Length: 337
Image (cartoon, rainbow, N blue to C red; front, side, top):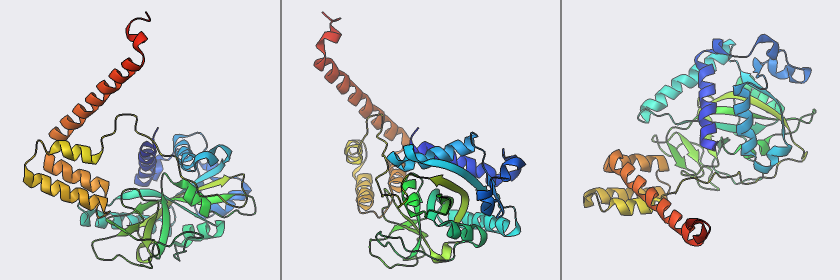
């Protein structure tokens, strides 16, 4: 299963629980966890039972996101935010209100993602109890503005590397839902502390492949909602080395955007191709996201033409691959003679 599938599954799990906490599979016995997690249960966190789908989806996402370190990392416990107290309910309601407001501003899509945040146990407890209170600059990393830094769902390694070992040898990370809205690129070394204009809602280091989400201090308690705490034990006591998370290669023939645009030029009028070339240039300069570029292509070319072009390209690639394979193994085509 690829990382996109994991992100979608976690999203569905979280959404289901936020819509109706009464549907939870977690029974009361799970909330009375061991003594070492009393500090979480006292704050309204409910332990997610090992083995159920919610636990397995989050565990799989976290371990895949830390790459080779996953095989030696032990997920000790996962706790879910019950948001059962008055302040918890108020924070959830605030998140929903801002989600709707940003969605309305951004044409119906608030661009809500899951993201990791690693810190000390005390800081995480403070966030659960009172919300974010400071924009802690990343340690030993480049500065990308002054805000709360979170890591995309596929890069749990970055959240884990910011986690601090407690007296029990455990580290703790938050899995949050984050309202990103319309993102803008923040350059390395920037001291930006708010959106550059009312058009933007959050910052990223790279629009097409973000490694950092930056939520400005004005939005840190309205645009970030902590859903889960993952407590884990890792073999290295001095902290994680930052490594590149494994990237998933496409299993089907991949069609590069310049190739697609070149083929479309044979079907579309020059007026539309000028616009497509402009949007492609904007994408390459990180002015728009890949998603936004695809949406523009769909509007200008139409889904029917795009599907036809991509299918034809893939079929030709498959045929070329088969011919190449047959040429390299002539005996197989002759019945082994």
